[in-house]
Every structure is written in structure tokens, then in C-alpha cells.
Image (cartoon, rainbow, N blue to C red; front, side, top):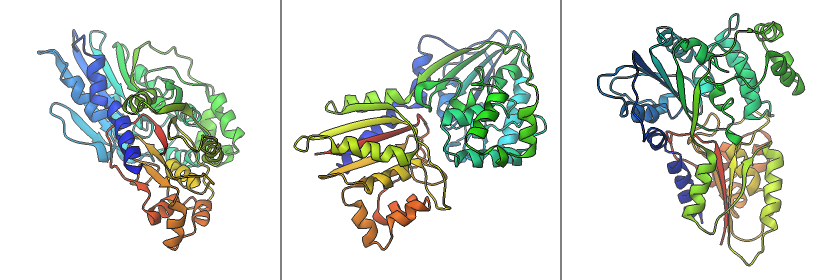
Length: 407
């Protein structure tokens, strides 16, 4: 069952292959421009997306290409600058990369064309703090948001209001050239405004609504003074230039691929959200309700959240897997929760793969899973039982998938 779950996870990742997604999107066309074709790829899948796009450029077309991705996924590309940036916490390299994007787009004219290739992770990888806000301020905001329990859409809602490039900012930077974007979704529901914080679409909300969210979860007072001042100020009223945006891969497509690989599998929820402390008992109830004399393969997709109360090491998928291992679920079973990018939180694990014996294995290894869970230390607990899901960087990102198997 563990091998089956791992195989299904591999199927989900392959279905979200970013190069194939770009190739499909451009299968009936070639890329050209009357003037210069500007290609900019941002996100964890930026390199393979750019490689596929470059292969579709018409001969003799003047091209300038720039990639911004995380160090693990950065590889050289002929005819293209590849810049590395910090993730999940923005860093100075990312700020420099954002300036490089702005400088490239500032050269555009109406006869030029801009093609943006956007994938998950772009929000942190391309920090361009709004006027008056420093990178240190943005890093502090990001850290607070990651531990706030806010959904990813809400976090991106706030990030957009603090950036020059997010929430349609790339369109302003590229004006007056027309912009076409090809987008790989890593968010539940595929809201284009939330993917990489929506550099080529209108923002999710306003400065006032971003402030309201921060106050709702009681973290407004944790915001730097510069951020508070910016959100309290009147917004820029300039209209946003238009763009052509195309969604080319998503979490649902990966779930469908898993179901095709295992015809007996059932997709139970393709919008699994909420805090893992609430999601785990909900899932356990589903698992306990299954007929005990029948095999089952259940699939879920989405993105949960974690509220940090300790100082341990882990991520939302590891936390969810650990919590499932502590639930009372009868029979022999396995449960996998993994991030399709191969990275769960600030760790080298994609998530966790637990079974009916995981709890006992942790205790036999001399660790108390309940104590570690209370300290947000799922990485240590799962490591003790050999239940960390280790894949390395996958080069794609379409949020998370969960797999429950009982034979």
C-alpha cells in the first residue's frame, strides 16, 4: 500500500509537468512579435516552462528571456538569464530579481510582446516592496502570515497590497506592450488572482480589505509600522492594463490523472482546506465510516494551513500526516499527504506517508508524537518512524494531494 500511494503521488506530479503544459498551450501557435518578444518566467516551475516556450519561438524573432526561480530548481538555459531567489521567505536576491524584471519590462514598446510564465512560489520569489516598505519588513510580514492560519488566498490578498509587481503590477511595468500569461495553478479553486499573487490579473481586494484580514486574525499589531502606514494610505487609482491569461495546469488535473491510473480510486474532495487540527479528525471520520470489508482508495486535493504554536520543524502536510497517525482508524491502511513541489514548509520533505503502525514506531524510537505535535515538530516525529515523504524538488507546483489506501 505504501508503494501504491507513492506511485499515485508520482502520477500526480507527472500530470502537472510544466513543460508539457506549456507545449499543450502553444501546440497550435508559435511565439513571435513585431518588435521584441520578452519572455519572463517566475515560480518553482519557471525553468521547464521557459524551456518549452523558447522551443516555440519563431526563427529570426528578437527575444529577451528571464527566469526567476528557487535555487533547487535553477538550471542554466541557453539564451536566457536564470536568477535564483529565496523561498518561502523573500530575500535580497529576490529583490534584485524583481528589479531585473522591472528593468527588462521598462524597455517595452507597443510593437513588442510580453509572455509571462507563472507558477506557484512566485509570490515569495519576486519581492518588490511598495514604496516605503523594506525587504526586512516584507520578510517579517511573510513569517507572520505563514504562522497565522490564514488560507493561501488570504495571504496573497495581503501580499498583493504590499508589492509593486503583484496584483497586476507586472502589467503596469510592461505597459504599453500587450501581455499574455500562461499559468500553472497551485491554489485551491484556481483563482488566477491568487496564483503567485496575481502579477498579471487584478488584485483580490484593496488595502482596506487587507487590513481587515490582518485585524480579523489579530496580527495587525504584528505588522511593521511601514506596512500599517501603507495599508492606511489611499490606493493608486490608475486603471490596470488588460492581459490575456490562460490556466494550463491545476491540482484537479492531477487528481483526475490519479483516478485514471487507479480506476477504483474516488476523488472525495478537490478543495480540501482549513486548519490541519480540524481537517485531520474530519478525514479520520471519513476513513472510519468506510465499509470495513471493502478495499478503498480515496483521493483529496487542496491546501490546508497550520497555526504555529511551537518552534519545531515541519509543514502542513507533515503535520496532517502526523495527526492522522494519531487517530483511531481501524484496519491496515496508509495515508499520504504531500506537496507536489516536493517541499513542505521550510524542510527537505514533501510531506508524510503514515500507516496503522506509525504511532507505535515513533514511540519505539523513543519520541512522543503528541509532545512533538504540540511543538509543531512533525518532521522529527515522522523522521523517527521513517515516515517522511522525500522526493526532492519536482519542478512543478499544483498545491497538495492526499491519498488514503486500505486493502
